[in-house]
Image 1 (cartoon, rainbow, N blue to C red):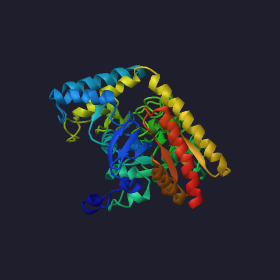
Image 2: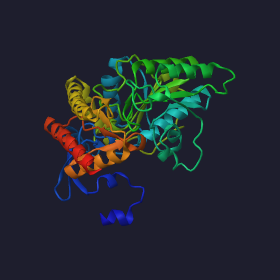
Image 3: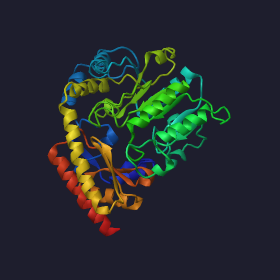
Image 4: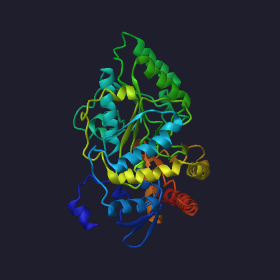
Length: 424
């Protein structure tokens, strides 16, 4: 670890939670230099939906490299980019009756959000954007302005402006719901926007996570999402859904909002879309909005990532039938059941939230949460905290995690909680 401590920036974070040097990884396991194996309930913060070194993707990538495929192409046309676009359209868009254009800006989620903000302001000619309490949308200045976490915001060094904050509409009551979330909050915001003396200007967009991952795994209700969508439409604003961490099959369907009757103007995607761990970010944009771009007006050096297109096409094969998504739902129910059994011992003090293979336990205590995460690491389980003060413990294992690893990981988690409680 001395090399990292001597030469790497103090900004490093996850390595402080997992103080070891990892050497290899396969599916839901990582192994460090000492040979210790860890069950991965973190999956690269939602990047590795198909596991570490997915064998199908690895085979396709090796073949691509050996054939001297075009690894970097800016936004020029390549065979692998065409293959990915066609596979995504055929597998995801066409079955849903969607005709959204695909915009690649690369390489990460915050770039996708920045592009969405820029386009929404271009389309509407407005500046203000509505975002939610507890929301997380990225670290660059535009997306950081939408992000609610004060720890991240304080690092900006400049004012983060042109954002109106509204309460997030949770599916079930959770900590913070006393702030007045739900459709009533949408009605109050509507009244303000429609009052010519409120001082609020009409917004360019409403940017919403159907599931707030970093914000504490808050799941939005369908009723609230529909109400926000209608308000955006009535105000002439764009309705933008950020599905960067909760999408790409994480919840048991490709989009976390599938089946809710939503019709977003822009969907931001990243993390798991490339599949293998190589970066890729993509916005799905309605054609009538996409035409507001001028050629080359928004660029990105790594928007033509050949490796990600190759792996991303393989990822599409997992959505050509219901096998994997059925497994995600089943395993998600197993996780939720195990967490609810643990929460039952807290006499109602702890809360379980989530959908599919994004589950969380809110222990309401930052120190206890950190102690549990540390104890899990010592016992060979990787996971992390999120939400206000990190008091929520989030579980996002690979969608392909074997049953044996899932069961063992949940057992380790229960043991770690007991040990952490005894130590605190």
